[in-house]
Length: 421
Image (cartoon, rainbow, N blue to C red; front, side, top):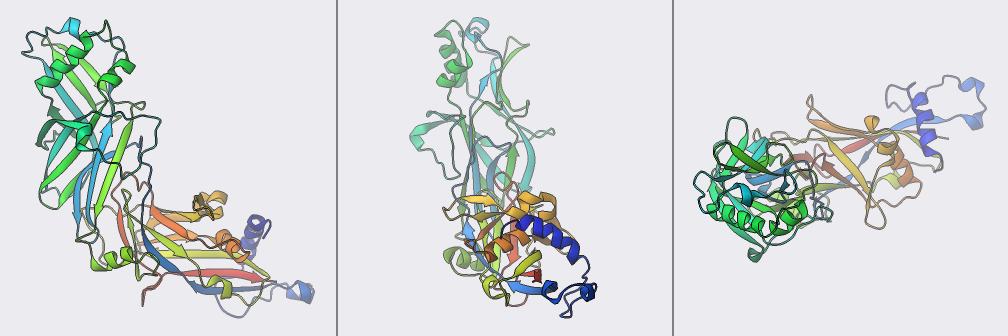
């Protein structure tokens, strides 16, 4: 319907006159209106269908946070995160070979420091961290996806150690003397290093982890924090930094193993075209929920309909939360276009604050206002579905088990307020 946005706001004002969903309609002012102009205001409840879909083809390059680690979840199975990144020189035209005596490396140390912002999972778990040198190029301006993997020929192990943490949330790993020698030898081949020279010589690092005990944990690395860097110290008081800044390529990589996941979740994943009793949201390119509205075409007995308000509420399954892993602070929605691409709903574009999606702790729910989207569907737009995901789902291991559209007692429904003219 043309001008549906304008009609929506006009009808919001009119709808304020009604405080319930009773079948009798308000008669205020009807005596002053010709019978042909009288509008009927009604409300109804509409069921929906939900499906659990794997969240694939997720771009993961140059994010603000780079998770590493492994988490074993009794509902969602096992999730593993690793990352790769470039380093650059803190000062251009570096000539370390002139400042460090390459014949005597006593007292010369090379330390990788990784600042982490948050820790998820079990604090009782332990892991081994592997620091690898990349032997293949990565690029800041390239697109990378969550399923990127490196072949064993594309990296070499530099250091492997148990995770150890300082009080100020910095992981410190000593690099081998062989890397110090290699860097100094590389610098001696030219009078001075530029950043381009260094990145060609030292292509970057790839970090992965191995879970050694417990249910696992995950660390949200803040690589562009000034404390994240590689530092070479020499001559007792001298040092030089290899930094990780916003111009360095940074890539997140995720894998999900649902072998030991909850049976209900596995059934949903294995049958992505079958409406489910529960729907699932999982961060780090895990799972998303697809929503469709098959009842909409038959909800009304007229084509002369204006949808004034449509409120969709989804609720966490009782007892499904974990103290060690976060529930999404907010969910977002995108509609699926005819060409398979995604776009924001008109409701979000019109008023993102009114659109909703924030977590309500009082009843463990998320509420969305989507009248414009339903009006567009009613007017003939294809119902290809809506994807519902967690905000920041590319960098935070959020997880949520929600009642779905097919649940016997707590199925998701939409309350629709509409005008018939």
